[in-house]
Image 1 (cartoon, rainbow, N blue to C red):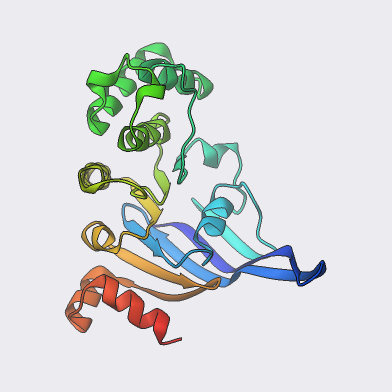
Image 2 (cartoon, helix red, strand yellow):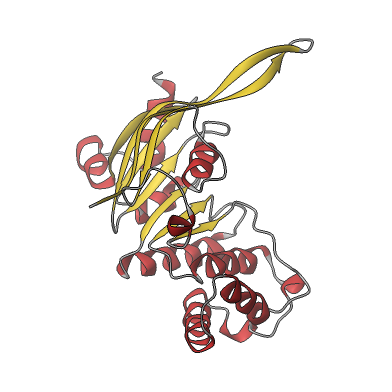
Amino acid sequence: MVVIKTKEISKTYKGYKGFLKKRRVSALNKVNLEVKRGEVFGLLGLNAAGKSTLLKIFLGLIFCNDGKIQIFKKERVNSWIKQRIGFLPEEPRFYSYLSTYEFLVLLGKIFKIKKKEREKRIKGILNLVGLTKMKKTRIKEFSKGMSQRLGIAAALINNPEILFLDEPMSGLDPLGRKRVKDIILTLKKDGKTIFFSSHILSEVEEICDRIGVIHKGKLIYIGEIKSIKEKEGIPLEKFFINIIKGL
């Protein structure tokens, strides 16, 4: 079943060129994409390629100028949709004076999750992201890796069907990347649909079922990781560079 679909979506921004000369900047150009339930889809691209813009459209934070999107077959990202998705921004921000537990309780109350169910979810999520022992620790004491895992925990508090992750391994050391990778693989086994952008291509190669390559706002490639390995016989990083250089 297709849970995310775009049809010819485009997004332009107002910008400037030279000395205060107005121009239109194209962030997305007629992007067509489908993501199936239960798959891990990786969106790859250079800086300013359009990855974050596409994620923001899926989240209902901005709107496309042309084309249509569908999430769960609905064309509008309304409150019903937002109850069923989770999001980890590239640089998550928290109330640093709260403890891990207090922060997750706050989010649970925002989603109006009843106390008994909320406690059950928090316990399970903390175990999943490896922060059970940090339950009472103030967030201001967290390292980059711990903050990233807390961000994933926050994105999971409403038990979303789709999880959107923006550069989830950015700035992490090898151990931190492995922990995040293991979390994503566990969520995949649980049947979650995961859509994420990343620059860490070696990790994408291990995690994703399919990838899309976006360049200068255009989706220039979509394919299965398995197919790339079998047909191309080269690492994903080299495959990605070859595509970009070939344009």
